[in-house]
Structure formats: C-alpha cells, structure tokens
Amino acid sequence: AQSVTQLGSHVSVSEGALVLLRCNYSSSVPPYLFWYVQYPNQGLQLLLKYTSAATLVKGINGFEAEFKKSETSFHLTKPSAHMSDAAEYFCAVTSGGSYIPTFGRGTSLIVHP
Amino acid sequence: SQTIHQWPATLVQPVGSPLSLECTVEGTSNPNLYWYRQAAGRGLQLLFYSVGIGQISSEVPQNLSASRPQDRQFILSSKKLLLSDSGFYLCAWRRLDTLNTEAFFGQGTRLTVV
Image 1: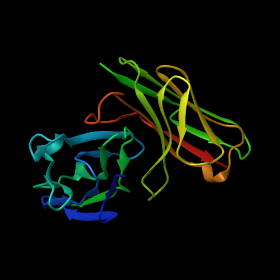
Image 2 (image 1 turned 135 degrees about the horizontal axis):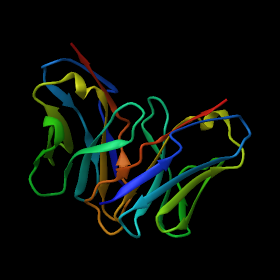
Image 3 (image 1 turned 90 degrees about the vertical axis):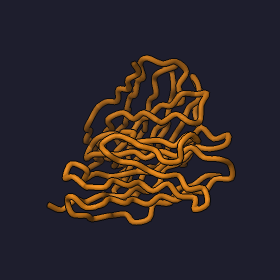
C-alpha cells in the first residue's frame, strides 16, 4: 500500500522568503513521486516529478524537490517566494502494481507582501 | 499533443435532480481515466477509475456512478443529487502502461447542490 502525508494544511511566508512544503511517503517498493499545483477553481498542474533518476528534481516556476529515501521524504522548496506562488500544492505517489496515484491532503501556500 | 476537456465548468442543481458530467481526452489512446472530488480542506478523493471501455472501479460507495462508453470518454452521473454531493469534481488521465508518468487534469466542475 502507498500513502502520502503532507505536514501542515497551511504554510504562510513573506514574499522573498524560502518556501518549504513537506511531503512524506509510505511505499513498500520504490515510489514515483509528484508535486502538483492548483490555482483557485482550476485543475492540477504538474510542478515536478521524481522517477528514480536524479534525487534532486527541478521543476517549473523555480521549484525543486529532493528525494530522500532514508527519510521517506520529498519536500518541495523554492528559494524566494513570489506572490504568484500562492496556491494549493499536492504531493502524490504511484508505486508497485498500482496505477492509481495517491494524493496528500494538500498544503495551502499563503504569500504575504 | 494530448488534451483533456471537462464540462460544464460550473453547475447549480437542486436536490434530487440528476447529474451528468462529461470528460473527454484527445491525442492518446487507451488511457487510465479518473474522477476525483475535492471538498474544501479535504484534499482529493478518488471516486472512480477506469482502465478500459466499460471497466469501472468504484472507490467510495455513494449515489454516484461512472461510465466509459468510449475509449476516451468518461462520464460521472447521479440519478438523485444530495446536498453532500456539492464539491469540485476533477477528471484526470494517465498513460495505461507506466507508473512514472503524471496524471493530467481537466479544469474541473464546481457543483453546488441547493
């Protein structure tokens, strides 16, 4: 079975500050991990994905995430937050024989001017 | 390139009325198709998924149903809506034969049952 836990339903940062959104996964086999972003009243858009190549993955809009097997984590970071980063962020996992992506509950990123 | 279309974008329906939401995918064949519901603060709840025409798996027992009459068409239905059916419904697709590809989402349908 696979699962994803996103710590913190809301994260608030100032514009220009570091963004850190946490994601921990559980999987009995090597996982594939994804981060998505959702703007209000829109569908989800892929930010980046880990597919067992490089452990540090770079995505769109300056985001990156690092796969740490020892910590079962895939945290999302961005060095400097921008107002346009305010959105809902979802971590997801697929693994083993399951073709169903499992999503975390989401983290709402709030960016203050 | 592949695209996914979902409609309508918004819908207001009275309690007890029927529902039909449609999702179509273009530019790919034999995709995995998914219906999710998103309630405020509750993340994404998988409702149904399909790996082929006529093959539907239900994840959550409820008064909703899904059908896949064509390879790239996925329909979410209800005979009688409940207030609790209100939410944001998302259709998504993935390539059938891989684990490492992402899901592609439609723009969603905001359903309000009144």
